[in-house]
Length: 344
Image 1: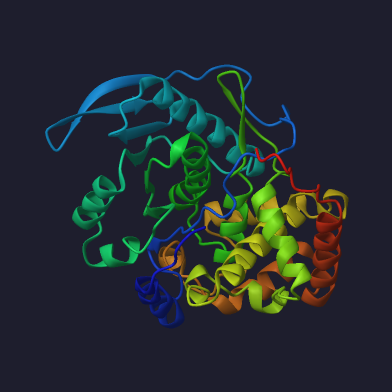
Image 2: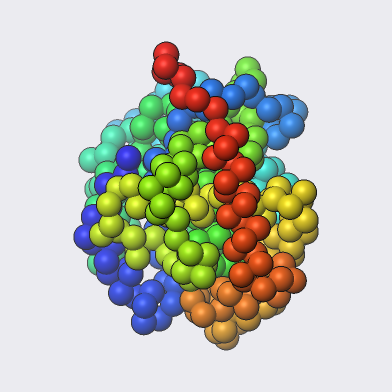
């Protein structure tokens, strides 16, 4: 589980007054883990990417730099085999982001990532690079964060690190490529689609319909009667749930994931083209009803814009969308496999 600290209230305060701030915070790990389902080979690269692991120095100590066609990962982790996998992961994840958003133009500059071997190294870097906002990020006990178009994480074991990197990578992709901010709940939900990473030899694999951790949290929320009304969910951000119980926090992320999955595959795929139009329009700065000037739209977000935006792109009123969404969630929970008593 993720521990949410009171420092995040500063982000919540900014959001209430000014919309979505330039600093994009990600607090997660409830959904990270290896799912019991088999690998779905439909999502993932068919060939290895070009990955080069080079010597680097951080604070006078030996470190590594991972260079791929689209990323540079600065790491104090020195296991070259693991870092090769991180390079393959990021390139494979980028291809998955682009599969979900095929009409978003590709950036011509590498994206930078920072991966530290220990939390103290991560904390030191955070204090140096995020200024007065460092106290926000230092509340994160497990997970990572994205600032502008670079993300920062620390080693949580292979599985946990792959999960965080793949999730954070979508926030990074959105920050680099979108001129208009999409609703935070939707961006969080889409990022959760990529958390479950499996491997076919040295090649990463994704099945956007699989995330056992989020699904388990969703089932708990349904059984507890804790589902948020969609009318509330669409205008929310993570800062608004930080003072709630761990179950409510997990439920919020699970519902965000469920809505993104609903847009991707619900109603027989009816809304998938609408989701892709949302992402395309966010990239070119023409997102319907953003409610803020184009030049500042990538930084700020108007919570009141979410409902009319969704109704516009999905061509249905929110009560209709809510009914279909809840039916979809009920189906997901009903199909959930029993927990594996042997672990995994």
